[in-house]
Image 1 (cartoon, rainbow, N blue to C red):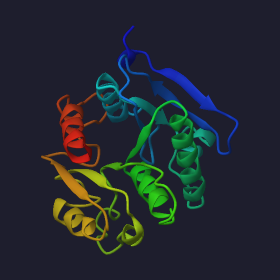
Image 2: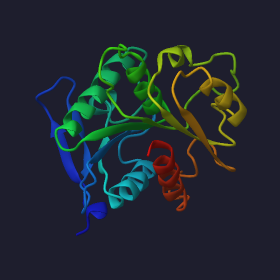
Image 3: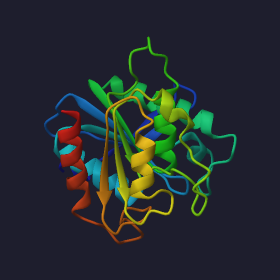
Length: 226
């Protein structure tokens, strides 16, 4: 079986919170890893995450799709107001676990997962070695739908990790123009990849899949970070 069709169950119970997910080992590793996590109502089996993991693994990345701690505790439902800090700790542990298997690590997430990934990197002190070489933020939830005044950008001022933001042009959580303005707050290199006609799910809803999107994201990622 090829690496992209046979991810292995991956756990690390020696840390708290635990790490739980699925690991894609590439046939020809390039020494680079990617941790991917999910949105608020989802899990690591989200079709978008699977498609991205397969695409990156084919290109030589070791990819870990992980469930955030709140999802490990509860199979359904969104995270609670007190879950975010523990979810970030879980992401940090996932990065640590993947670092034992490969070299340079990137961190990515869809919606809530991407927000927690960016907050985790923003919490790092300047003198600390970077947790991740870069961020892949899929459908960053800039504000709740129809509430553009409730911006989730306070930590952007402290985010020194380069970030590629992938945003649908019909995403109610943030328009392309709003994302462009928000990205200017980040004191690191940023780039925005608009996905024409896509909403918050980036065209991956139910059995619907934008089959060309993972490859387009990978090409943009490669150009931006290399």
